[in-house]
Image (cartoon, rainbow over all chains, first blue to last red; front, side, top):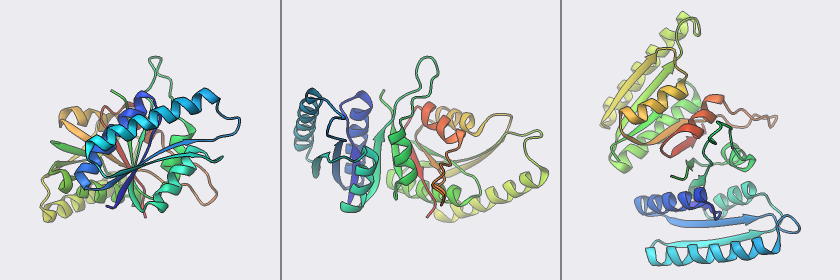
Length: 133
Length: 133
């Protein structure tokens, strides 16, 4: 496998996805492609862009010290995260997507994001779904 | 990882899940636990039970000739496949679940089964979702 695409957001499930993707990259000797996607324009606030840039910088530091071959990408170009992630599979010739998904809430309510469902439906490669501990 | 649980049904996505689970078992040197779950009672017809038994027998033959350490299980005890699969994670000390999911239909209609959603929500380990080619 040439590469693994992981969708990163700065949440417990985003970090869980990153940790699992790092393990998979080691196991498969694959390059890790970390992708953070925001829609852009007025969809997010200025402080969200700043927080995101800082989080991605921290991920870059974490990966650099891990020794895993990797690249980080921040997309703000009007696409949904699902579209950015699926496009990245083709661009980076990936064989696996890793995403974080939310746990069922304490009230039993289902918390599946439309992005996760879109990724599962449209991904041309297997999708590994990870929850935070 | 000690074992991988794969939910098997005799459909293109079920076979895709099995193929991927076999690759993962080789990669991780894990035991493969193949689980076929039917609700039982009047939920399925007699010919469905027969077809299922034949399909599981074929899977057993395929795995025996593969050299992968494995076990096959057919559960007909009133549980949903989601519950049987998640229970099997604990029983077999599994670190990964593999399931087959359906593709978006040609009309774009979403075809996510409630079982797949329940597994994703309630699984205590990562879930690898595979579509048929």
